[in-house]
Length: 173
Image 1 (cartoon, one colour):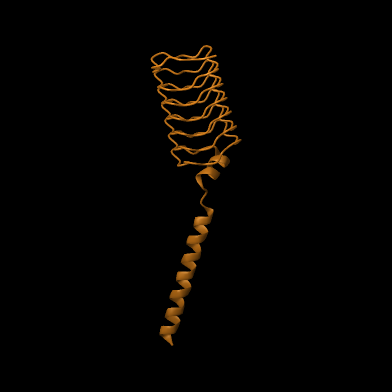
Image 2: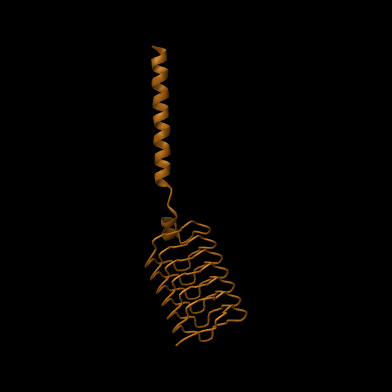
């Protein structure tokens, strides 16, 4: 009789532990949810995240991984994306004015129609990125790598390209 009660207690205890673990897993926010709720997600893995049209003004995404993420039409005004990885991300028509993208990886990213006015893109890696029709007025592109980047019809008024890598040097209006 005692052994049956002991076995029953062990089973009940195991069940309680299992339910606690399930409940704990359900309450932990996914990085996307955390970002949308708090606008704080430094070093988060948001690879492939769907964040189009999101309000991420002044968000902290320092060193976040956003490769292949979809941020089209999102508002990232004054966001901190320094050191973030945004390779092959869709940032078309995104508001990135006054954003910090220093040292960010943006190779093959789609930034067509994006507003990058006043943005800090110093030391950014923009190799083969699409910046057609983007607004880069007053942007800092010091030491940025723009190899193969499409700058067709981009507004470059007052942008700083000191030390930038632009091997083909082609810009079309």
